[in-house]
Length: 511
Image (cartoon, rainbow, N blue to C red; front, side):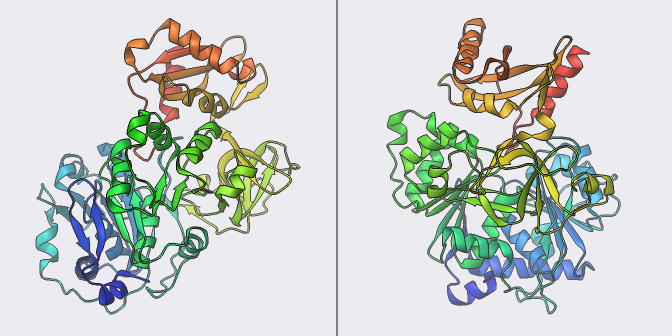
């Protein structure tokens, strides 16, 4: 139920395998290294309830550092490794970190925030040093490899990706439970995906993101082996499934799209027969994409809907989805309520803002206004992640779009996710974003920005083809009036689209 218990039985078993370098962290190393850092954190004065932050690439010691903070009863914030200095300093200072850890690869931005983060007392750097940082390796070298005396469970305090504004820190309550006490996610994963100590879990996404971090830590509780990709590549992901006999893996829909757009001979080259559970989340998956993945991999694709806020957890098994295509699942934690703008609950089938009752409460750290904005307007204590959707007669939830992305054109509500889902599967489209831009007559009009699979095809002919393709499948008012082309769309490394950046750019241009 935790690395120390696993190490006592199978010390030389691989806990973490880095996909690119091949470096292996055994359970003995995971246990001893995380204990050494835990002792160092205690020596630095940190006690249960204090805070540590770290900004790392998918580093071999990433999960070691997370386990050290977790077994020390600390709040720990894993930070997006692509942030610029002002974004990084905001999070490090806002979360109240007393210790900050980074790597030589990120030294330039990490060392640039020293003056802006005066509450940090200890700064450590992996693989080298930078001004203001001590060597991580030298600092932990002399520490004991045994657990600290007051070992207890900490918890992550992660920040939203900032796709709709300034990142928000989600601060859950700290349990300080014994290290071997199973949490809610441990039980949910066991119920849905039945992993064991023999499982091999592939993590193709950045570890600082909520789902990869939490799922990797949970699979390590079981004694499974976690294979971490330093960077996602669609063909390499298939090769890793074959090479390591991967049994479980978690994806985002954009990864499915990229794998499906590989040549057929490439997709059929790899033996994927070991894969028992392919899990996806983070964004709605276009129905056609999931149908094609089911045809390719079989009925092993599971879906869940949740958020960094952990106020709900909905689940759709492969069988559920095949009989309710497009659903994100039924509730296992938190009860969905679809409401109008005034908080009035809507009947089954009607679209509205999705709130949840009977789920864990949360707050946005040091931001009571944002916390209040996530509560229902009638004071029932329901909370929302900001999504729009509906619930069918069987209790399955379907998502339409983010509330903040809804387009209002001529008084009609348009959900751009519908057009995105259609265009995403067009054979000439590598990536797409649909959003509203100002229109003097209609208020807003629908705009698409596309990354073509072949940049040479970008132009009026492809624009006309894509608009016609969309109009064949959706009501015309939902389809883009125009299409622009880009070499690349701004995406979070976890796969989430930074649509806000595109929308703001076009609004500023119009102004």
